[in-house]
Length: 487
Image 1 (cartoon, rainbow, N blue to C red):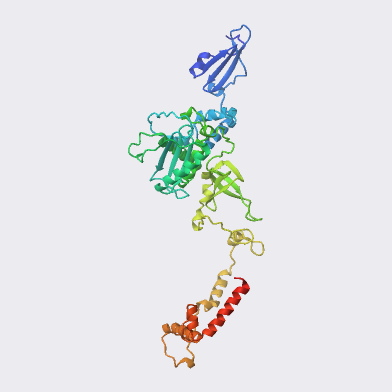
Image 2: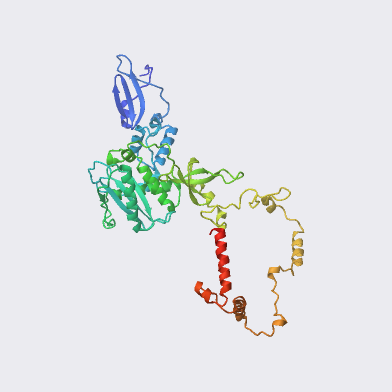
């Protein structure tokens, strides 16, 4: 129709592209997935719908409204902060106002989630009808022979899950026999917090390796924890020895994200009757600078890596890169766009093998003012680096040869042979062996002081001693001294 003044949009073509249509009260919306592609309005009694906006001259795919770059970045940021949580949980937290839901879009493909969460299809979950806190508790002891020891020298963890609220507690163990001690500690804590008693505790009697396909609530929790651990370690680039820190962070996030077992309620909200604040969440393994006050000329921040949220403390647990130890602090500046894997090359520099690593000890030899660093200035203003690369004088070898000749016969006092000593001539009448000299000297000292008689051991022996008068005088002097000093 050459005489038509407007372009027509084929509804059939849009349908073939996977679009849906929804209209009411003269307004027709064309959607694809969760996004509204276009919006049209009918004018008057006309059966045609007019597009609101202008059409682009490119192909159809480019006409679809793309996700805003900032929104996608915002979504991926919170997806990472929450320990690679699913889309459903993101939507629930957005509706509860935990973050700006208008900026959150659909979570795109995440390779770290695939690496950490791929699993076999399991059996359906069992249903437990509980009416209050601590009515039914699931517990399991986790171990793996392939996991290295954590920073705290732990190789196991035991978890406790409240069936009603699905709140999780985790304790790390060095040996299996610590499990009962941790259970008693956990039981006292939760009973004081909730003012209720633990009614039923369910474990698998240590038979988790007999049939690994029949996974209960506690073992499914362990799988969820380790899924998050693998994803977070993959994203951050941290070594496997940080698995305990990642597991602790996973439990912290599980308690603050919706659970499908309780109709997508938040475990922490059920337990404490308050919606948890997520403003303090940060990406696991990101770079963090913690405040330091080691001196007026020393930098006021130390570079580290964020590892976990410590329990019962307002702050963050940071792994200091230079000192290789953990620190809990509130005064931290985070740089979430930079992860540990981005700065790993700085920590593991080629020359790092020549430098001894000192753990849990602050090395202060390189502080400013001691002139021990590579940039310490020499007289004349030249740095050590400049001196190393400065051209060598022509007569340098000659000076070194001359210096070597001058010092050829020089010896330090400590390197000289010790002068031999001789016995005085007046002692030649006494013939003794060298090993007996010390004993003889001690015996002679005893004879001179006491006349060969032992000192009395009690008051009666002092009275029977020939020198009893002297002992009584010494006794009176001692008593007078004690009375004078009031001791």
